[in-house]
Length: 290
Image (cartoon, rainbow, N blue to C red):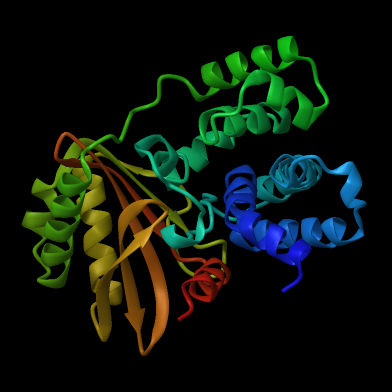
């Protein structure tokens, strides 16, 4: 590789992680990174002081251009929209609990509440620890404006429920859920669910899925019973590290049919996300190399 290509490839994981947090789509994030690569190839190197800073600005602004169109598309989406799942290893450096949390399915859903500018400021600040001066340079805004946008973003996201169970505890709960699911033990599943648990499913109108969130332990247990009956024959379940969390994958005849992520708090499952849209699963398999 040439030196220019090496410089870009060194930044690629970080740029993909930035684009993914901005867009919630692995396919679109890959497109943005490829577009940034083309612009990098045409740029005059003497005008680039820091490759990382230059690429962060290009990627952020490419994402801002896409977010307005993405919002219109999601308003027409059939059922509940969930982000495309991504193998944790594809999301760039996740060295802290905050960085892992910033790619969780629940966090990305919350980011949908923000305007494009609020989302950019929030992601750069919360996930990448940018200072307000750096953010201002990326977005061509004043520091004061960036502070205001960040403040508004925090209020919009709100004091969300923190899914901050230790990794070992989350893994134990997910393993117990997997064992109960494999054994058809609905009573065992019920014992793992919080009273106010919520289940979301994303079929995108391409496969059968609940169009609205299912709320409450009893309703969720009945919902899980329906899923178990539907997927009982020939389904294999396994573990994977997805979006910084332990996840369950379901396969039938070698085809991935769902990625399931549980949100855990206080030793109980408080949220369930079922991603069933075949297009999103296809992108996931591509990133996972399977």
